[in-house]
Image (cartoon, rainbow, N blue to C red; front, side, top):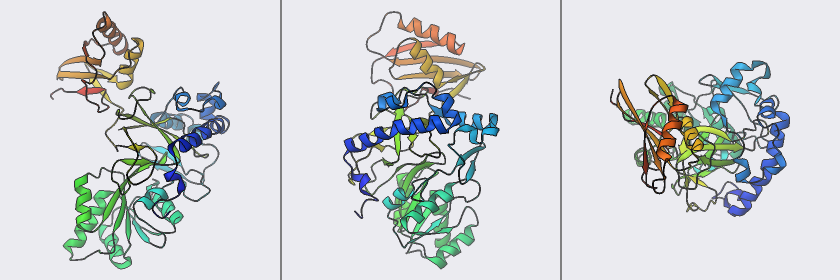
Length: 411
């Protein structure tokens, strides 16, 4: 199967789902017994009973902010008690937030080899890696994936553009792994110097947006660029294939899309927050809320891979606005809806000028239920300590963009 990294990518979706759900109880039990943080968070949870997506959705979310807070408050536990045992290496992301290198029998702890393979990188090739090799794990993530494929790497890191371009000219790598912006800089520098890079034909880019216009710009210069969605905490989440229709979810994670500010799963097509459960034994993150917005695309990829597809990065879910000196968060909007037994799409619009703020909660609901607007107003005032108007609108009236708080104020 040269087109696919392995047979898992072409599994029957029902077979994949059964395998993932069979692994969930074991992972939860492992987290409960090996991770002090999850021993507390999942106290009383019967791991054996969490064997469906509906059951998984009953568990609390683990937010990135909770990792950082736990690490700062519980230094004696190292990594806030979320890791299961002592990792081989610990990295640092801005915040600071510390992430362990996950365990992996195959030597690819972040599972990036799958994305590199989909981008066309093969054994025996050389890839220039321009992600950071200092403290943050991005360079190590790519290098481990390349090694698992049987490919070699040039650890270029960040900066030193002239030296990196010289390495490209001298070593003639077939592939590139790094940010799209730095790849563009390298190609432009090469063109300014009158240098051609005909051997550089593949790229796996991440860490920044890479819009279709930039993908086309790379293609005009002979480089087929593919994107992947990965984080230091979770490793690979999803990756682009030759079909270029969304990002295919990795085989080693379980992805949910939930309503921002809640843990409530949304149906396919609805934009919401990306929540990921990993099957990594060393860092068993359960329902990790990434803060990123995306949506599940219907159907399967034309490339033949059968896993879920995400639309890609669609913004941030951790939305807030400061209104009359008070911060309002997406979670508060969710709390208002829950108190009034409402589950429709909602948006809190902040309007006016910064010195004269107005709030209006728009909620999709069938008909005009008597007294609902008043209930929502009272709940908003109680939870946010702010007065707000309420507008009940027909289902389908609000944009499907995952936004819960929209700030329309003029400065």
